[in-house]
Image 1 (cartoon, rainbow, N blue to C red):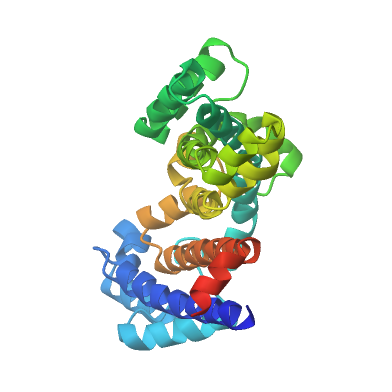
Image 2 (image 1 turned 180 degrees about the vertical axis):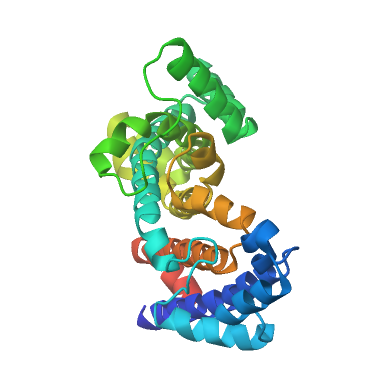
Length: 317
């Protein structure tokens, strides 16, 4: 088990290094010039040269990558070109806001998805299963911005229950954020529930048809005991990684939802950075989101190994 954990940690470190290469040189390949985008109509040859020297944009890309990687290891993401502030300072409150939104959506979405998936799996091809599956397919088909637009029209414009957009600063207390995250949470919950419940349903159907469940039924074991003590734990094991992938996507994939609701999160900051061609800001956010994605999946993988001894045996060879 120890060697498996160390191997996973080593692979995670190597993956983050490879991603750092892709992030840095991928951002470098974006069309346009960061200095020209920052100065705009005020750009002159002298001002462009001075700005490039100030931020080291006139050095070779490989040298800049080595310097950026060294600063990254020390926790320094550089300074934003467009805002003239450290990237870590800009990301701080924004990341907190996205984490609040992602955590709230996860708290609601995961239990709902599990319950609906179990119900659909236990009532295969009956009206509860058909209804839940139909809603899931619709939710998976509709893009997030469509769901967000419908929610804004119904709950913000027609019923006037919630604000349509967030009009508070990024450093506002969490208590002020809460009224503004209801509609974004509902939007993200729709997307998350649809993906997770489909897998839970499939796993529940497979487990309920397994030999040991059939044997338990023949022995007269109560159905509620079969479901919660035998079927559900085994059905959830393959679902752990999908839940982790969904949560990881949630942290990095909320940019569109945050932009629609004007929510001051890290996703909307990333969009602004791309618009401004703010290379240090884009690179900093991208590497943080990639690291979060890898860490969440690493935790899910290790959790699966811990909960399923058979996986430890199979992967240990």
